[in-house]
Image (spheres, rainbow over the protein chains, first blue to last red):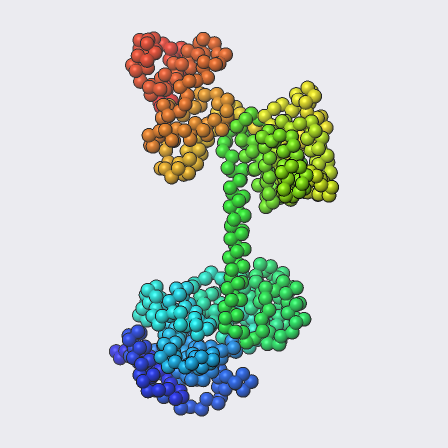
Length: 180
Length: 447
């Protein structure tokens, strides 16, 4: 039987090396084949003019409709400012125990907080958010271990505090969930 | 971070419900959703929720009205009101109605996390508080008074009866019979149990000190009164004051005490402000107060004021059948505090304890058991571990026959009823010893 894959769907101008790195890292950490496609759909239906942000819930629904049975998880990668109705902003969001997730670099950029840009730091943060959302999509909940990637983060500083790895307990749980 | 906290989200907007559902599921909460107040109230009737997040504007019934109905169904639930249209009036109204907090959509992610964490902390504090209260009750429960003898059961029944009232109680009994334990049991079974039980050992304080101790003093009331200090009556407000050794207080203090008991008000030493205190009085004494009244050393009016209910703590002599249970209780208590394995008591040692008169009552037995655990071999309490070699025989008024009977039995127990060794120790032959056993109808406890 062909092994199911994780599909990364990027939208917008991502650097080639940036995408190559995230594909490689997801594959390495989740031990699942990773495919990548570029999405060029019109983003205007997802834009909320009153908030000047993009609705992550709508994006998740649209990703769900493009996801196929061959993809075990589909994660949308964006460069725009995402929100969900109850929160002012989000770094990423996934359907808990679902198939889809979204992550954006927008709020991960140092420039957003009046600091000097740092491409390496953006990638570090981005990788952690992607792993975190994939963890939720497999059914992992927030972890209290400060360095675990499943630790809840509401500010970029929180993301910087943790590592991109799962703590032993979350790793074991993830392996069990992935084996199901 | 899996939690046992259950959450109910009530909002007419599906996207809000879904977002919150997902957010809280990721945090490990048990989450349910309702699209309107009617559905929410049906769910609340069926299931107990710890936290309810409710939108203020919903078709049919608004969040404020729903909040009032939730209070009637589940007064313990923490309700957080959400709204997209912030107004000070509605916020104030929500908080006045007992809502835990009021938040405006959309929330900052950090605010939402903090809000729920605070609510969860409040829930855990509440349950911790409840657990501690239960622990306090169990620590000083009637069940902690050891003994199943008839006299003790009668005392426990009296404690139970008197606990529910506010009447003054006087506990009489010899020293070491557990008068303070009875006072604690009365307090911990009364409606005042969550307020303090303040104990004063009247016999340990001089008249001046006792006055300041009971009524408190103002700064500068006497030399050394550097600060204003609350008295024990003031500290016992809402609870119980236990005056031990009441018979030792002076005539002047008796007058003052009578006045306080009648008015429940007093003035601090050196002060002029009248202080009110709602306390229940329990006294204890090992003296015969009635006799003291007759002799004129205790005021009759105070005696009748105190003696509303009289509980007599029985001496250990009058409830010897409780000795095995008491011994077990003290073994458990001291072995636990000394981190030792639980010991058992040798049959002959227990028989000897049952025979002893215990002038110091339960306190003496407790000390004996503690000593035996300390000096013993660590596996059992033996007769030789008990300080009963020098016995009451020497100071008793027993007849020669009684003394002989006790001495023979004591020696037999000491040698575990080994006839040859006992006869040798008593310097009699075995036949004589058998005759004595028959004559005094002595029985080997091990048989």
